[in-house]
Amino acid sequence: MSVALNSTQLEILKLFRNDQPEEELQEIKSLLIAYLANKVIFEADKAFNEKGYADTIFEKWKQEHFRKTA
Image (cartoon, rainbow, N blue to C red; front, side, top):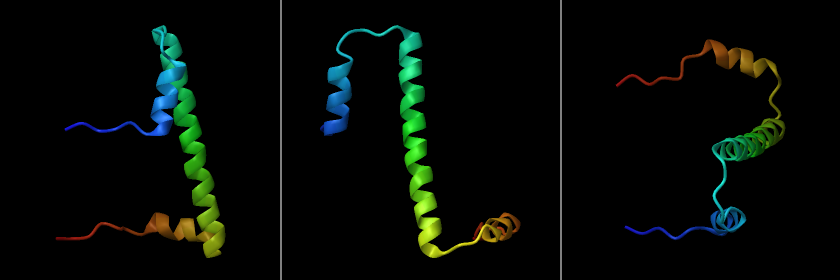
């Protein structure tokens, strides 16, 4: 099963045509993880604000159990 690469993946491959030292690969991985984490936080904050949730909702959620029994 072959999967086509998307445009982001292709651009990243172009940037790193040459071998990179392991240390640089770990730095790049950390940067990508931080970038994606920031995007998730931004979207969560946006949804939080759009729903009009107050900070107290998180305290309530901490006390609830969301597991479903079979």
